[in-house]
Image 1 (cartoon, rainbow, N blue to C red):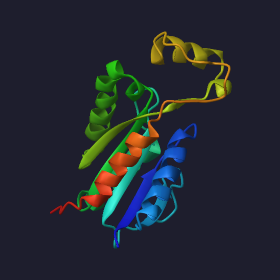
Image 2: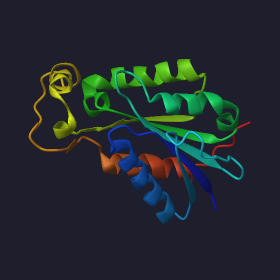
Image 3: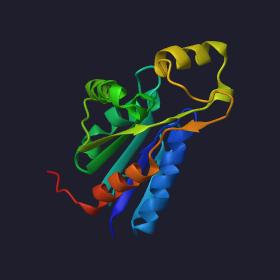
Image 4: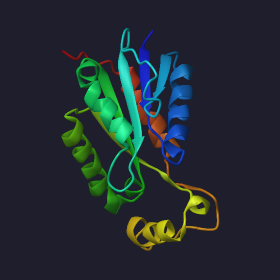
Length: 180
């Protein structure tokens, strides 16, 4: 049975929701899953017996969370011995014209951590309108959303394509890659 380490970071909760969905899917596929939240800096993490690692983190202001980046850099040697999938969650990935920018976030992550995952998937995130202050809403409207329409009176607007995410995860765990 394949053992998967699911490492994630979350800021507003969408990546946690994604990690939960991935964990549930992996268990349905009869995979052993161990989750690790990088915010729990002192929690022990083991790569022993791990066949694959799924890494999931959001992007805010062009960066993945610092705890996530520190985890990748600190565990680069262990990660390089495993088959790895990075789920980079951003609003840029929600729109075709934002995909290039979303890919740049991953490139910048790789440059900072010196770690390159085997597979990368750009995942559209969510907007949590009611939790933002005035300044954050202006940045969201004019910089992130670039004038695109969305209902700012609802608490949450998800852009995540759950079916596409599920297909990518299934493809990743079904194909076992031998890494030297």
